[in-house]
Length: 482
Image 1 (cartoon, rainbow, N blue to C red):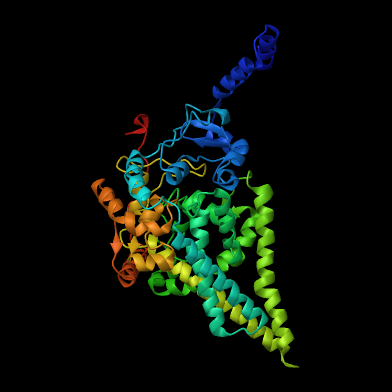
Image 2: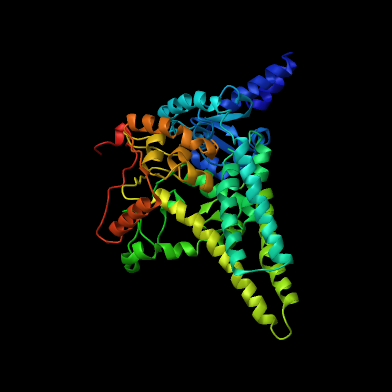
């Protein structure tokens, strides 16, 4: 007998609609989904061994619909672990339950060590007023934003100079580090909508919020150091950073030219991201959830076009208006060159500090993540250990103020939803816990020491025969020895 007939019979026999609804939910909960089925549908999300209705829950999510929509069709277990740092409330989410992961699939498990560290930090953060941005950080963000807007307006309406372009590029980098980064990780405000709104500053500086979320929230933070699913680990064909990467002749000199490559990084958010949104795929190989596409693809495209209007068309028109007769082409050329300097300065500053964080001598790479978002770690690993082993810190509290806490990458990767102003204060607790758990905790005293380690790391992998084993997940018992 089909479910509809059963429910109809229940109604005829006098059972309440509430009983019939309960029967429907029970039937839903007994459904089984494979990962391939969930990936194909995009309206579902997997948490541990349960499958939930992402399309329905996204609008009820306190942190904003976009964070749920980005995981439509994926496994969101590690995302919940990383951003909420507690056990998943399966009972509370029962209205959105649509079934279970098929018995043939291996559920992604949360890391109890990470939960234990989270519990230790809650008391410490409560004494500081909570995990979100303190008032000083909000004032700092407002000052950076105001300075950037004022300088851009001055350049457009009064005078554009080479120094002004370089300073504006630096301010754009500061917006990226101090404003959009915390906001798009949901760390700046308790109010999710405020985070989403401030996170759009990524579009203001020429990037794409939705593509940034795909790269950092969906991929990089969940699968840090994974040779397949961490996009930041994929440096080929420019450079080689792990043993699974293909070696090409020019990589013999990568330790000498990597800083030059960083000068061109601004092209990635300013230009490449525009076409990635059109293709709805990060790096044209990591597709975004179709659940997020209807609204966020159009939004990102329109905001990118608005950026080109602000930073290319209007400045060129202003230069043309101010140009002396006969010097129109030269004036426009200088204007566009100054805009290119802005992009180079901002892009280089961002790329320089990001690259230091995950490309040092001794960084740990793994495999085990899947395109579905699932991840299986080795026997002596887990979310906490891998995040610590694939990240590093540099300098201290002063650089934290300037760089939005991105010099505390270990703390940031373990707890991206804690505002960066707290990182120097929780670092001693994190270090003690991580090292006691048997994981590395690498903190460089100076930028120079960190840079020297990057040079050593790139030098090793510049040799075609240099290889370090990449550990994978533990095999199921029936596969061991087979």
